[in-house]
Image (tube, rainbow, N blue to C red; front, side, top):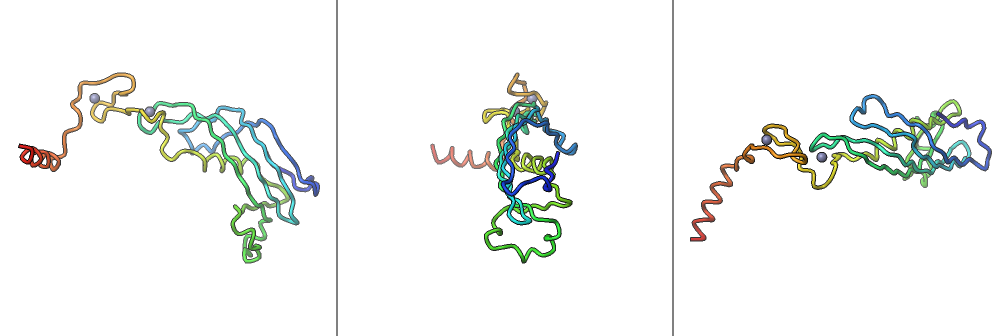
Length: 174
Ligand SMILES: [Zn+2]
Ligand SMILES: [Zn+2]
C-alpha cells in the first residue's frame, strides 16, 4: 500500500476508505480487527508533501493487570511533512516553519502508506492497557482473576515498617 507521487497532481489527493492493516509481528499482544478507516489529504509543496489525516480502528488489547483481552477503539490524527530522502543529510535546509512539523522521508517517488499508518497506531497505543479502571487484576499468590472469582489467599502481608507506625498511632490514641 503506497502513494505513487508521480501520479499526484498539483491539486493533491484525498483518500477516504477502509483498509486492512496488519501490525509488525513483534507487536504480539495487539490484534487489529479489520477493516480500519483511513482518511487523508496529501498536498504537494514543491518536492515536499504534507499529509494530514486520521485513522480509526478497533483493536484487541491485553490488559496489563488481569491479562484478559478486551476491545479498544483507537483514533489517531496525524500531520506529517514528507521530504525526499536526499534531504535527510541536509536538514539545515529545513525552513523555519517546517521545524515543528513531524518530518518523514520518501524515496523513489513513493510514500509507504502502510508504514505511516502502522507507526501512527503504535504511537497511539496505551502504554499500560487496562480493561477497566476497576480491574482487580490477578491474585499475586495464586493467580486467580479477581474480576471473575475470589480466592482464599490472605491479602499481602503488611510492611513491617507500617506495622510499627500503626503501633505508635495506637499509643497516641490511647
Ligand atoms: Zn483487566
Ligand atoms: Zn489467591
